[in-house]
Each structure stands twice: as structure tokens, then as C-alpha cells.
Image (cartoon, rainbow, N blue to C red):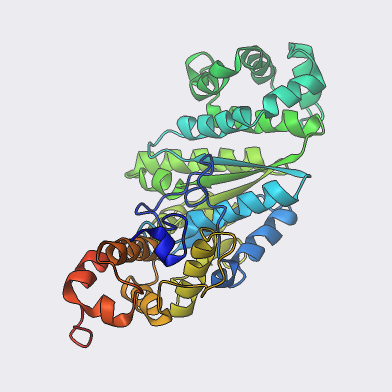
Length: 363
């Protein structure tokens, strides 16, 4: 048997819970998203972006991978990219180190890779000190001469070197950091009349959790303050968190005062309910059907199989998709016509699909 027997052209579910918007594989890049299972979360995030809010958090109670934070952010990214021309969505992953420089460097690299610095060059011409300072004067009453000069110098470099120079700017300009430069860099695009950036910073919780101890937390607070101040009025930031990272940030006075994490700023991802799991499965299965397929939306699965697996994995979307992929592989290997509850309840099948023995009422 092969995928054709299940009305599929290939495996819809991958075994690794990962989002990479740069991939052309729609199972990985987040372009597949079951909006029905999100219960308005996607629209809530897009609404904050339309309102030009500076910061939005996408969080989950669980720190486990696969909860759906990155998937929601990626769905918003693709929606903006396809449907809006007044904004430019940017995707980057935070680093796990305590320095903000590499994370800011990744954001700048993503902006460069998307061709935005070239668009800026076409608007401005050459990045002379005068041209850069004139642009910055539209956002700042008295732009820093040092930052203006360094920006002009860096932006004249080949694109392959710009992000690295930003990341390590403190080596040549001791009084300023990459985060300080970030706001100035964004201001150039706003002043030139280019579309507003919406920056999706995935894995931000890992950057937050890398900070332990008083000195490290103080640095986190300082860098976070500079990040928000630099972004204000120039861009919208969408940051991923979970409950443990929230607790760390909430201990920083600046966050409580200016970038508070509450029901207004935070989109909380809830575990999937059983019917949500069915909707998610439908979305992925439908994307890998032959064009003339007319069968059941969830074939080869019985609905109760998907519902049981969703409940068993505690509503974790990543674990659900891994298990559904295991079930399809196991079904094909055993030449099974349909993945039923009877099939799932067979101990060897259950272990192959979910990695543990079945409950007594199934076996």
C-alpha cells in the first residue's frame, strides 16, 4: 500500500514540531492553519496589528514545544504577506543568549534578505551622512551624530556584511549597542515612506529565559526597554512567550509600566479540544489530496481516532500531528484499509502511534 490508498499524494504530517517561514514546504512554513480551531485568536492578533499596537504577545501556559504559538504567528505573517500591501511582515527567531545584539542582528538580516534595504537605497540614493541624518530628522528632534554617521557607514557596506556590523556595533562605538541602533534603523524606512514593518520574533521566550541572576535580569530589562522604545510608532512587534518567560518579564518594572503583559496585549494559545484536533487534521489532509478526490475529509481516520489522540496528547498540536503521521505510516505498513478505533486499540499499533501502551478500555 502507498499514500494513494488513503486518498493522499504524500504524508501530510511531519514528525518534527517546527515552523520555518522561509521553507517552501507548507507543512513547515506555517501557511497551513486551521482557523476554526483557533477560535478567533488569529483575528485578535491581526486586529492589534491593524491598530498599529507596538507590542503583542503570543503566549501559552505550557512551555512544551508544539503548543501552537509559532503556528499562530506564522499564520498572521502569511495573511499579511498575501493580503496587505501597507505593511511588510518580517520573521526572525530570537537567540538563546543573554546579549540582545544577535537577536537584533537576525531581525536586521531578515529585513535585508527581504530586499527592504535595497528599496530604501532606491528611495534615498547613496547613504551619505547628510542623507541619513536628514531622514532621521523626520523622526528625531536632534538625531545622534554618532549613530547617524555609523548608520551611513554600515549601510554603504555590501548587504552580506550589514547585519554582522549591527550585531557587533559596540566594538567600534562603545557608547551605543545594537538595540540603540535598532530604532534609528527602523526610522529610516518610516521616513522614506516605505511600508510599516510587522516583526514576528519567534522563540523570544528562549531569549528571556537565558537571563538568570540580578545582573543578567538588569541587562534584560535595559535591552527590552530600548527595544520597545526603538519600536514605538515605527513598527509592530509580535513576541512569543510562555508562562515561565512571562513570570520573568513581569518581574521587570519597565515591562509592568510600559509593555504590560495582560489580556489586552496577550493572545493566549489554549490546548486543542477534541473537535479542534479534527479541524486541524482536515486542514492538513485536504492540502495533500489529489485534485479529483471526493471522499471523506478525514479519511483514512475515523473521527474518534483523531479525538482520542488529541485528548491523549493533552491538546498539543505538534504532538497531535506527529501521532497522526505515525498512524498513517503504521496503517500503510500493516496494509490497513482505514485507521479505526479498533486498529488504534491494538497494543502494537498504539505504541507505534503514541509511544505508550493503550489504556485498558481500548486494549
